[in-house]
Image (cartoon, rainbow, N blue to C red; front, side, top):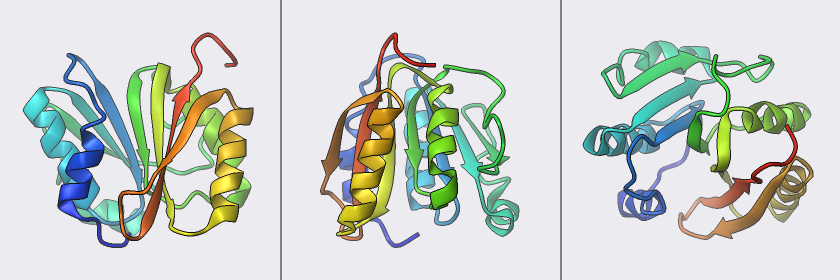
Length: 170
């Protein structure tokens, strides 16, 4: 993952309200800037954080880095039927891993089941790739995510944020 500006990460995290018992998942394949910020954020606010790693080598490098009462690390494959054992528990899912084109629809369907009603998915996409941005918007809409917007915050990434539609779909 390319470099992220710390102040911009803090700005992005400001969208998360200071409410009790918030759960955050991050799906990553490399880079620790966002994961470090999320782990610190959840510890400070007494939230829960799960870091799902899609790259085996990266997992081995950091598997013990975020293990405390508020954070945990798991190995994940996009081909899995479920990414976590419990459904509808996450308020925010950050996705910095590159989801393979052939897995994107299945990924959105799988992750939908793990997000609470009215929860958010936040996807980091390569900046200035309008085709990729449009395909993700369509895919999210098709799978019952609404209020999809982009946030132009980082130098190298376009942020797509979308809300799980309450009471619809799976």
